[in-house]
Amino acid sequence: MSELDSHELLEFIVDRVNVGLFIVDSEMNVVLWNRFMEINSRVTGDEILGKNIFDTFGFLPRRWLEKKIQSVFMIKGFSFVSWEQRPYLFEFPHNRPITGGVEFMYQDLVLMPVRGESGEVEKVCIALHDVTDVGYYQTELKRANEELEKLSRIDGLTQLANRRHWEERLSEEYSRAKRYDETVSLIMFDLDKFKNINDTHGHLAGDEILRTVSSNVKEILRESDVAGRYGGEEFGIILPNTDIKGAVIVGEKLRKLVEETKVIFEGVDIPFAISGGVVEFNDSHARYEDLISNADEALYYSKEHGRNQFNSFPLPD
Image (cartoon, rainbow, N blue to C red; front, side, top):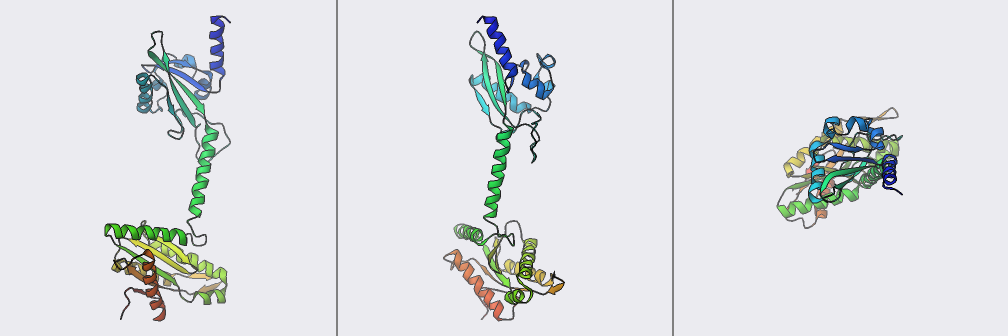
């Protein structure tokens, strides 16, 4: 095959390969622009060859791309950019029937040095690979895994932390408070006479009340607080950087909010209330479970002394 034939074959391949190929010199002027780039950018080679690429495509991340290209001139080697680092360079349409925030074609980039006769790098060739399908499905897989991880931490009925995750968080806050001599308080509470509610109005009514109380909890908590369903109708609230006085205020605020909340189920207004116990971490708590035990003691004291109230540990004489 003659040299001319080889050159023509090379041009044929460059223009028909399903990869974006363009070459820039040290002044960022375009010296090659293949058919893939023409079709997706809607800018022909005649329109861009010899011109600065940033003058034509003002949306390009100039400082970032110039740094990438200059690094190839300096190190005289290849450079790679994954779509995970930067989803796309050019705002090319992806032409896929997919949604979910995929606005433009995901792109992997390979930057390659182009040497002259002297052996020095005179230009940089950038190969742009369409990886939209890979990017989309990996993103969806990651999102699905994150959702599964979230579901593994959340109680399905109340949408609060489930017991396992809540105890993990309590253990972490206990360890942090102990290590750094910080304050953390714990509230344990449950619904008064909840069995009577289920027996009288049915379990669906009971579920609605549990959901309502959970909404009440979310309404009063700070972002740093952690509420969880400990079991059945019992709940726990972790209050980092909160002393016993502050925790009692939170408990009383929640109690009043629950007392004022109405649940009408199948036309029936169902009254309900909560009782709780509060404890603040101190050196006597050898394990995080001791906090739960003390808060439960205060909770049972509230039950025994009339319900619909909160008490703190140590208990009144």
